[in-house]
Length: 83
Image (tube, rainbow, N blue to C red):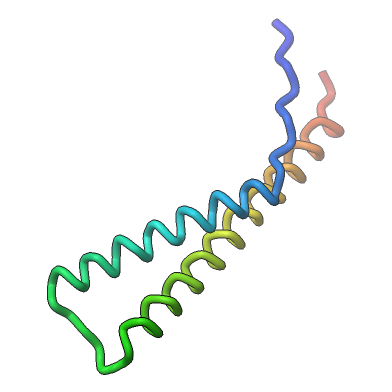
């Protein structure tokens, strides 16, 4: 049985998906804090925007790095295959 080679993951698309996941997590955490009544002494706008930026950039970097590592591992696996 011959398997088809898998396609490369696009790091740009992976970064976009990671940013969306990060922003979703940040919104969920902020909603939990608002419902629980936990407000900091900092301006809420600054706090929410900062968390959105940190979570979005972190998710984008994580997903892009995973896509890059997967592409590199798939390439080295195909070149080192002996059968």
